[in-house]
Length: 232
Image (cartoon, rainbow, N blue to C red; front, side, top):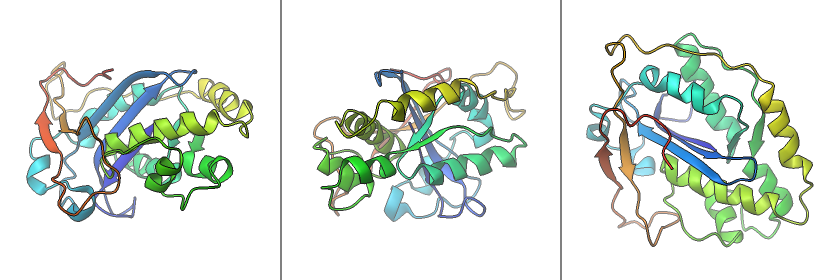
């Protein structure tokens, strides 16, 4: 499961400012999570949407610094997202900027799954699909909140009686055959120095869906160096 927040709508003109990965095994059980804000080397863009302020990304890693770990996390995986082609396009361009072509990875879109297996939804945005599936609230427009909600939606759709078993098995088999590139550490940090992450702390209970006007933005936590691995 992958989700990005960006400084704008164009992968060619804008940059990723937050990225999250939720790792699931073949039975859709949680294996781990990875999330960090990123320094986009410029304005953070629509703060009114993603609620990331310019000061939140001060000291955050650049994309190149977390790229090696991100490649490791995505290797052999199906890339799942809600409107996944958008998230994939942003990741593809970020890797292209550092000279790393992403392989042709299997994609699975929960928006498309919902159109088939959640016909009662009032719409097919993530919030409407999550509501129709009865999954509760989530921290909308945060990369990790959206990725977690997408994981729940994937489980719901693949568990629907209308969903053939091959909708998950075949993409998994295809992903296992894809060769993935490897990447050394960024020159911006001394060799072997861990990359500290900057992660937004999401509300625990109750979670929320579309943001109420008065809802405060999630707090920003600067994790200790060495915390770059996926954590359950």
